[in-house]
Length: 435
Image 1 (tube, rainbow, N blue to C red):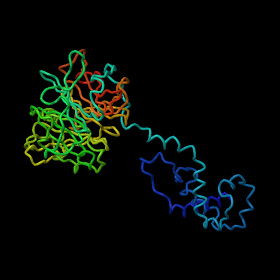
Image 2: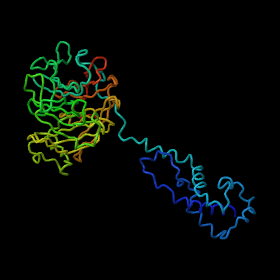
Image 3: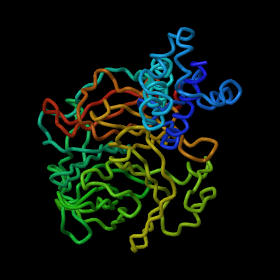
Image 4: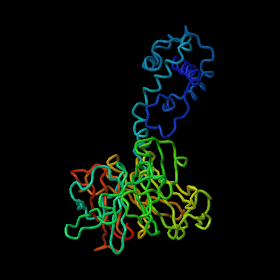
């Protein structure tokens, strides 16, 4: 009979305690320890009351000792000290401790499982030669070289930008040394100073891209010098011999992003042509319909995608070139990386590369537009093991027309100037990746 009394008492205690129970935890916090009694299947407070009225409707504290020999082993585990008349006054004590004793081992495996579930597939090994080599001369640059863009033509160039001091470099390959060096013509030998359209300021240039317009170059900047946040895209024209360049256009983007610190802004920029977007039926998030370039007058022939360092997201914009500084966000997606330092669209493969620096082991994710019309991650790579795990903030690739043996060159820009070098090179596969 005491067994039933104790069950009845526990149910009374549990009923009072249930008023203060915390509701079900969010699955994102399933890995945290819990004191919820719901994990104890054999002592559920919902079943115990069904025995109370049938066995002992009017129990008194004087009758409980007559049944002590029958269930002696249950007394210390269920309620060591309280009597039926005093237990309710100590409601929080018995239920919070007793239910957590029995299932201490059972919840362990499931609570950790959600934190182990990968948000992306494990990184694949690098598909190139894994024979990274430096391709600039020792101490050609100082620290802070940040982004790059390969331009193929009668003479091949690599464009690169520096965030402090704010400069752009135009480099060509020295046939004798096979090193990339600043071109010495038209005022480019020491790079050109970058300015805002006013001819003043110091854009914190982080990356550079080109479109199909002759002489036009676009950079992304996250602030003016070391000042407040000023996330913007700036357009320059390579048509002067002056050693400084004032932007022809600026598109301010702060309102399109979450608020971030001035040094956690946009780090990468790339241009995606309309021809590819139309062919892949790109989904326009602004109009919530398939992308139609004709609905965006004066935008040129493509969309500009930038990577926001703090969130690791990529945002794509249509830029109005009529001179009003207007921009329209048409897409955004996660890079799958904690932070993002560079974005690079390879028009030949239709792949967009999103890269990180040493903050996330220089990992690289690859995207393409899927059947939904949105950019979907298809591959994620660990970097070449021969690449230093340094602050590689820039990444750019050659076009497929330069493939040899199924491989083409890819370049990294090291913001930290590790060992006195800012540029490194390896190979990546041409065309679509093999599965």
